[in-house]
Image 1 (cartoon, rainbow, N blue to C red):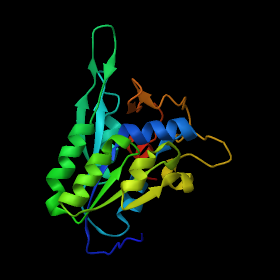
Image 2: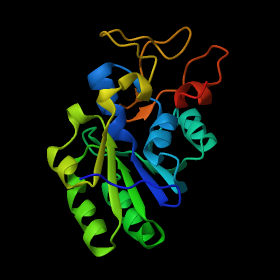
Image 3: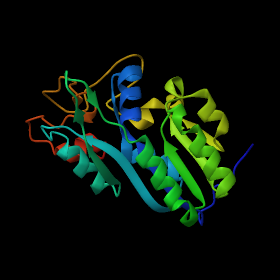
Image 4: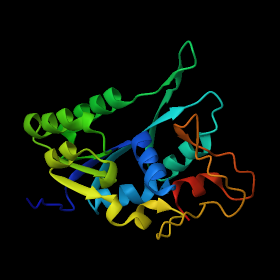
Length: 212
């Protein structure tokens, strides 16, 4: 079913940062251009709020990445990683992201979920049938839940044009580091948050966000 996207629609986008990061890493060995993700998802409509849900590790090496998102007009909600006895680590924003989307629903015409996580299917149904919102999803189709795709009013598959949504990816199975030198693709500290430890002269905020 075709959906309508007109300029006067009030749009909110809620970004499951970990989900997109891991999808890009596993599928393409690359990093997500979050600025482009928001631009494509909003599609020229009235953006009311863009929120990225991120994890802070003990080293706080992600600070540059968080600043990069803020420069792009993306609000960051930060949660500290939890380390349990035995060394197990946990960081989960699913409930917080869902609560925020519900809380904003009455002020939005369209809610965009940037995630491929099937756990959000009940949220999609609730937003559609309780609040009457148009609910769209943008994610990497190859790693996205089929049920999430089916329940959303619209699904943007970033796998159809990965170069548009990734930093340093040129296709053909090639991976080119997003930094000009010194990159070893450490990508995220504790495997949850983008690495900003490169020491050369590039602005890490610009490099990590994909804004050039």
